[in-house]
Length: 260
Ligand code: SF4
Ligand code: SF4
Image (cartoon, rainbow, N blue to C red; front, side):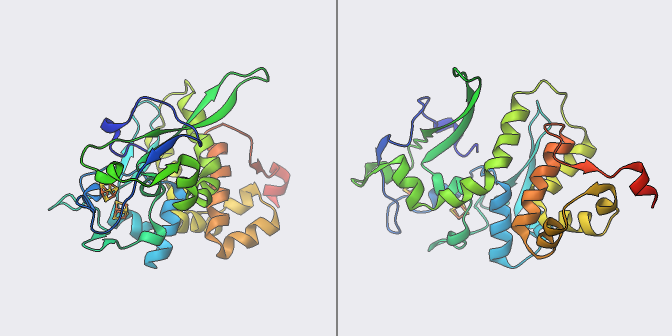
């Protein structure tokens, strides 16, 4: 997340929370929010954007993102890189967002933010989603009359598909935040970044190395990954859980099988 974090309202909201908002071409602040902002990308954002632009994931990441590493966990994140001259998002034009149909999740949610926490319950710890408002004083959208609930806003902005696709990745972030493990070293950071964001490189890591000799992966899953980026991304989440020692999601082949 961390888009305009300084304007975050410190109140947790839910799907029924109401707000007034409208954003349209012609409003006085049009596209102002697409300048000098930090937009953290999710794995599915990168997959959608690189597909939209018709370029490989490594080219997308090199051209349009910078890496932010969380100090405590050492977790690396891809963040949209603003242009050097004007500090603008590389996709903003006078007419608005040039990648609108594939815009990142944080751009879709804005002016709502989304968070995850672990809460205590009778049945033990449960994961809870919550929301909050980001009230940037430069954003005039709040002065408009159209009323929404956060639930309606999510549907209108097409966030449901993204939330579903990122669910496992979000779980991994939550587990990492709650852990007392030492920060990731550089080698792990690179693997984590690749498995999270660089779907084409990760596919080649699986198919062009000894990976499939070392790990047991079902034939069907292997076949799906040959041409389906989403399947590679989802396998990446399994791999992340394995290397971050969150869950035994992968099984190594037995020494006898390896010797064959
Ligand atoms: S209303 Fe807010 S979200 Fe819309 S263009 Fe203006 S600043 Fe951006
Ligand atoms: S991706 Fe689109 S909506 Fe998001 S900051 Fe860039 S131009 Fe604005």
